[in-house]
Amino acid sequence: MIVIEGCAVATVDAAGTEHADGHVVVSGDRIVAVGAGPYTGDESVTRVDGRGCLATPGLVNTHHHLYQWATRGYAQQEILFGWLTELYPVWARIDAGIVHAASAAGLAQLALSGCTTSTDHHYVFPRDGGDVLAASIDAAATVGLRFHPTRGSMDLSAKDGGLPPDAVVEDTDAALAATKAAIDRFHDRSPGAMVRIAVAPCSPFSVSPRLMREAAELARAEGVRLHTHLAETVEEESYCREAHGCTPVEYADSLGWLGDDVWLAHAVHLDPPAVARLGATGTGVAHCPSSNGRLGAGIAPVRDLLDAGVPVGLGVDGAASQEAGQLGAELRQALYLARLRGGPAALSARESLALGTMGGARCLGRADDLGSLEPGKLADVALWDLGGLGHAGIDDPVAALVLGPAAPLRLLLVGGRAVVQHGVLSTVDEASLATGLARAAKELR
Ligand code: ZN
Image 1 (cartoon, protein in one colour):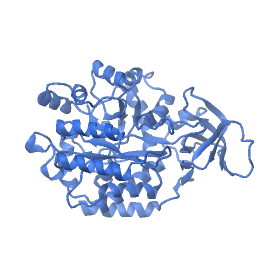
Image 2 (cartoon, rainbow, N blue to C red):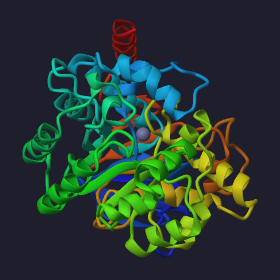
Image 3 (cartoon, rainbow, N blue to C red):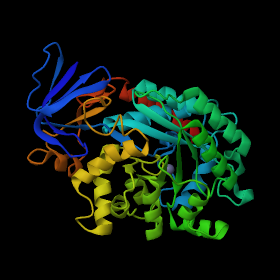
Image 4 (cartoon, helix red, strand yellow):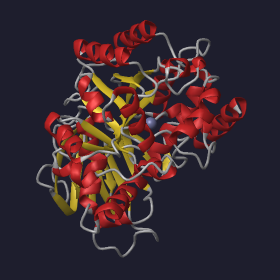
């Protein structure tokens, strides 16, 4: 058993329970007690001194492209379509070795910023690139994060009216077969699962309607979740109106792509009926504030989505459009963007923390096991050190975490296993990851 005590605790449970001085007790991979004051149970435990710290649920990253860690810093002043056009030919040359180095680096950076569960949207599968999906899954096991990789796909190249070149798209039937194979091989249905697969055709401008429709049928037959990019930019909206005569959300709706088993990356450009439709169908949204800023895509209507009952999580997005890759920092970015759009009351610090925890767990279909500190849930816990220069003197620990600079971690537990201790990764060597990443990026360049 591990007892964390002496810390502030923000449980992010349904009642928003917090303790100014409390404890979190972990046994095996589960939380067994959370409460005020010191823990008074069994003495035969490992005690963690949490004084000066805030315990929260581990953060959940709902959108990422880990392979892009090897292609940071490209296309620095492009909108999405120009950025993609510059990067597709680079991505056409990735292989399993590059994806492993990039994924390990990206996941380590996520861990150091309080993330305990991450998804990954992988949609580039070069013919001679090897087993890139297995490479990212192996990297997640090495770093020690809970992982929800998606088997992405693209089958609509420029010659058929899409954006990507031929070199990075797959044949429709081959993509569907590979997606089914990924589920068979890696999807773990057990409650404490460390790996779960989702089905994720890439976007309206890189995927045929047939692949979208049949991917949804496959996911529902297999009981796995669905993910895609939607309504990210005004250019995508123009594309949908021209190609399909409707908005991106209407297009997704027509393909069976709205529902409580779907979460959409971005959802920036939504009219009021689209927001209402996402709410009515229980469709989730992965809000990626820094990426939307980097590409100048726009500001998602997060307040409206929350008011409509939409599950909203946070995503760092791929590191080629968000070079920092830190999920903890997105808590503040989400708050800033919501307030730039809707004024200072548009999002509170606690609502922002809920996006990064429970909101993300809902998007990934893990609300029963993740997203809050409650007995019975998986022991994915972030213990943030708020005693240093960056946060000292802020009386409200949640405000310190969200409004202050990125906080260092005293401890990060994933399923009860320590992945970060005193700000240092315990599972992997950070310097070796940086060396491997630099080598992979150089090789690709
Ligand atoms: Zn993305």
